[in-house]
Image (tube, rainbow, N blue to C red; front, side, top):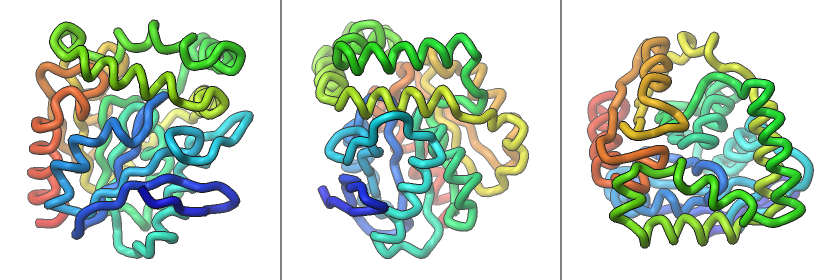
Length: 267
């Protein structure tokens, strides 16, 4: 991994392949490793860039709160550091989707396409925001173990939970290794994120939406509603996947991204 200094912090970044830059933005509370299937499977088609967001993996930790807009600005600075001045395709899952929305809002001139995986345009309800802040405080006090056991069953399809124990254990290890202050800062930032629903019709770049058919966090119905409001979009529903579709069904997700890139972005 490369280590890139931006604004007084360091981001750890995987950078492989050549061609159209594809930036993969991980979800909460994992790191770039959730994209390993895409890093391996798509580096022959494009330049795959997979950072650890601020507070996760090997990147620097900021205490307090880190907003989705700040994370988006980190990615903008990262692209500058990597010398990338062409338009990129930004792909975000869950929290990474929140960051992707903010990147579109704050840096639209850099976007050639948007991939939204298992995410939401709506903000947290007041109750959910309060729960996130309480979780943040609990993780700081007790560590990631306070989060992991309740979260794992919601992340994966039932078939994944039953048939892929290695994948579940890998994800558990990544969450348990995450810095508590980084988890807390991101949770507080998610609680503050704005409602992007009214702005969806303004997204005019090509957009690919991917959702696991068994996602109980960002449901198929919710992703269909988002897709209906984005003009130039394609929606792909991935069988046998929950909230972590790229990790659970990497070949199906790679095929969807590869076809969409060829037909809607590079073609």
